[in-house]
Length: 312
Image (cartoon, rainbow, N blue to C red; front, top):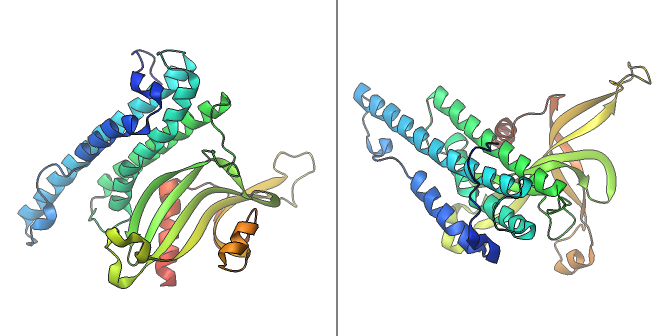
C-alpha cells in the first residue's frame, strides 16, 4: 500500500449513492477493456503477416488491461488508506458502504479476464495468458486484503448466514458451450454448511447454469434461457495424520478438493418447502482431490471446466 499520495476519498460517497460510485468507474472500465483498435478475428487468412497482427493486437490488449488493473488497484488502496489512516472527509460507515459497490465495479474486469482465459476468445500466446493470470490474481488478493481490513474494524460482516454480509465476491463469468460458469471466491474459509460441523471449509464456488440451446445468447429473455443450475466448491478439510506424534504440529494434514453440492434438504422444488426451510443442507460429493497445496483461483477454475468438459 502506497502512502506517498493523498487517498482519493470522493465526497460523493458520503451520500452512499451506489450509482455515483459505479458510473465513473464502470465508464472507465468499458473504455479500458475495449479492443485497442482492430479485431484480429476479422482476418480470415492464416499468413505470417496476419499472425504478426494478432500478436501486436494481443500486446496492445494486455497493455490496456494493465491500465485498468492499475486503476482498480489504486481505488482499492484509496479505500484502504482512507480507513486505516483516517484521511478524507468520509465517516467509517460511508466508507464501508462504498466497499461492496467497489466490488461490484470490479466484475466487468474479472469477466473480461475470464472470457480470455476460459472462454471462446483466442489466446494462443503463452506469455499473454501468464500475464492475464497474474492480473486476475493481483486484483483478487488486493480485494481480499481490503475487505478483511474493513472486517477487522467491524465495518463489514463476513458471515454468509447474515443477509447483509460480504462473505464472497464474483471473480468472473464465462461461457463453456451450453453452460455459463460464474466463479466466486470467499474472503476467508467458510464452513460448508452454516450450522452443521462437516469439517469442510469452502474457499470458492462456481455456479454452473445450463442454458437452453435455442436461446443461449438471448440475454433479453435471460429468465427463460437458464435451465438447471449446479454448484461446485473448492474446499479443504483437516485430516488426522496417523503417523504423527500427538504433540507434533503435523498431526493433521490439510487436503484440498473440488466437489459438487448435492441437495438433501429440502428435497423438493416446492417453493413452500424452501420458505419453511431455514437453512438448506447438502452433502459434498468429491470429484477431484488436489493435495495439500491450495490452488490459485484461475487453476481451480481450470479444473472445474475440465470436469465439466469430461462429463459432457
